[in-house]
Length: 305
Image (tube, rainbow, N blue to C red; front, side, top):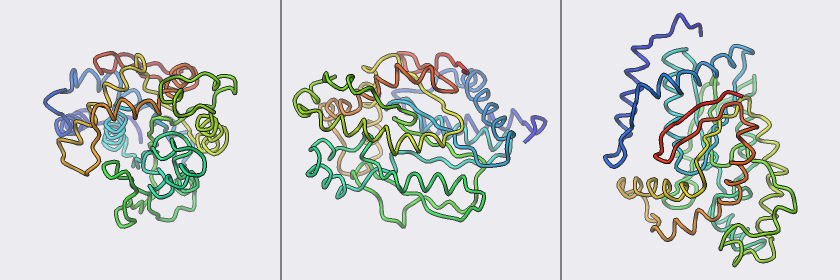
């Protein structure tokens, strides 16, 4: 894991190959080598140095709202950590731990109709999530499977399709839109932040339950994170714009039968608005690394706290 093993040419080749495989004609990656040198290599070095502190699996949280490029960035870091430092990385998303459609239907009847829609804290299976992270960090590692969630059908996949973790990794990248989020103060929940809360959460039952989840199980899970990286968007309005791009990729791939229309996406992102705005206020101070993303969807600056 020493720097002398760093092969820049090899890293660059694998990095460019991956980016080329991910590009869509409507939004090609810009300044590829500049971003490699200014962002990805320094972050990878930070993670490598964290690994050198103790010989145990490190959990790296990668947090950012929808459409910020968490999956792409996770895979880039995995490539660099392997090629530059010979570190094995496992990636998983908090999205893969969504409760099943059946479980969310039960929640919607028992607590609030709004829990039928996946996304907010309370719609994840925190027991499986917590145990998966503990398994990955445990010194006495035993192979196990991580769930997979298919957004195109809005449900968990069969166990035969789950991610098989057969070997203890050096690093786990845990990515998700609400990773590292903190609960709000009770008084901050009084006023609705959008049309959804105003019309469908009149008694504040939904947002109070979501906040309560952040105070309990999610807080316990996020405490396991060794280093938190936060992708900071200019403002919430760009979440909708970039979510449209994500859905466009799904349409192009032809996967699933629950691809959303633009109007459905507009409604969908309202579920994420309260927590996303709160994270934009709080995580720039809390996160170990903050990457700012500009209006054109490009990495703008990086700050190590």
